[in-house]
Image 1 (tube, rainbow, N blue to C red):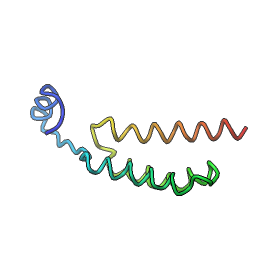
Image 2: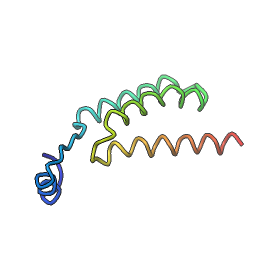
Image 3: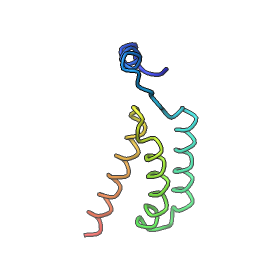
Image 4: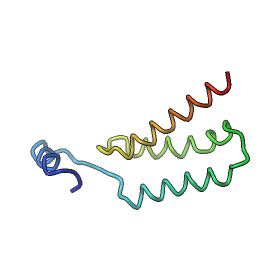
Length: 90
């Protein structure tokens, strides 16, 4: 079980199933996003976001019950990218 001793103890006491993405899954997701960005280097920002949005959203939805900072990292990163695009477009 991942987490600190306190988190492990709390999870055992409340009988909560903690589902977390493995390091391999996080790396694979990161690599997939990175490869997509690399392939679309010459594309517009809107096209890039349109290509990676389903990947990030799908991954975040799959792990939305996760107690992990890695899952929320992608949602936060995507929101920041969308904001940057909307600010740049105006």
